[in-house]
Length: 240
Image (spheres, helix red, strand yellow):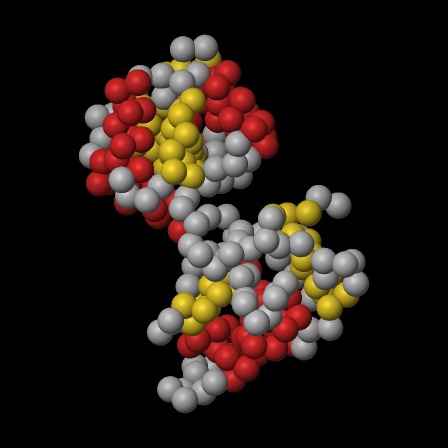
């Protein structure tokens, strides 16, 4: 699928056997621009993992056909996105076990919807930064951060300059997040950009000529007016 500079709405998988809770979360999160899918059991969670793509998970520990902590271990074996545990078990030991099993956060029931949304948004923003030694795939390109190489959609190497690769590497570390020109300048050239310094814009323009499907209509390296630039996709690791 080609990248798009149109911001994508995050998809959240709600795993809870209580239809009232699932319905409440569907309405509340849906009303705030998120897409919501629901699984009411461990079996439903397994189906969702096999057939759906989502950006975050809200996981209840009390599933009718299995323990939520066991489910979390299964999730972490195949999926690395943010998981927030929802549970009526407020004991500290449950929190510790959940976090040790791979949860990103723990929200006790009954919960405040605004607090849950804030925690969910924080988890989505954090994400998991790509490993610097991994080969990454994004919009048909392959990027090796350790070797500083980029392979094009046709399998041929792309000849990026040092500066162009530096800009791409910074954006890869912060996918979907606007990165200011000042931040790009300081992280790629070791200094702050001046108010009239357009060097980053030049680097981005040249980078787009090499990595965009249609450089005249960039859809991967997106402009954020008044701020800087944003990578429109989250890269995935390529297993050797």
